[in-house]
Length: 336
Image 1 (tube, rainbow, N blue to C red):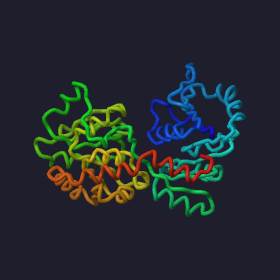
Image 2: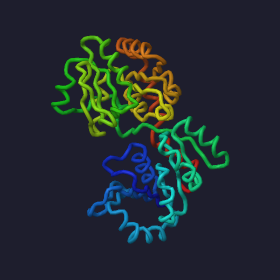
Image 3: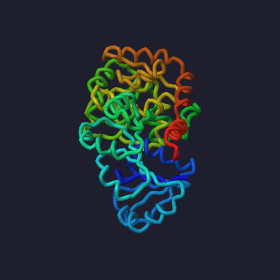
């Protein structure tokens, strides 16, 4: 089995779901996985799960511990990196292989990507837009499309009501809810949500759950902002919603995104209404994709009355789990 290292990009406590899920499932497949925290800590390295470790003092670990791990890795060593700015620094690991996991289309990443592509032994993309661009630019490089997925450990597909705190029960009591769960970011269409909130029935509230990211919450009385919630609490919140939203403005970033939230929403069986994102179009008819603000609002109002086929949505989510994604990766990378 291989040793897989995720270089320091972010603190473990803020780890995005895709690398988090890939790490867990690669460790479950028998590989030893090390996530290197970006922040330096005097804490000892942590074992998060079987064969999955968090490294808290990366520089010292790289000097004192990594050489012996690398030498003892009978299945080879592999660096898994999603940030192209790190391409030059990856040389210090002296790993056998490098995977570039291309997950976003941010303009600030573009100058670094050619070196990352040249450095990588395998390239994985999360959306058709990313895959098509990289295939066009690098026709001879080993490239695969592996989208995001649903974490079946969330239990959303089981259709049971998990317990919640008293505060949450009070917050959600009495009304039906339309919800967006995700970062309150510049690509979130706040104007669309304001218009929607004004059109909702009097007994229906628009609830926003997620951190402020590049913009502040507004003072709108028609929307309820609950702020950031721990990931383990999201199933309870999703179950409270009658309709779930993906209200993204079109941009290079959003047009290239494969939203993890779409799979989680669908696993609950609840109706999902999205703006015209290419990756959500591929999820039709399980996701209602709308090409105008009026269509978006009308569809939400319709789904409040006619939720549609919950069972089909759940089946779709269960066909696109993280376990399935890791099997796709294993088929692409012989080492794994």
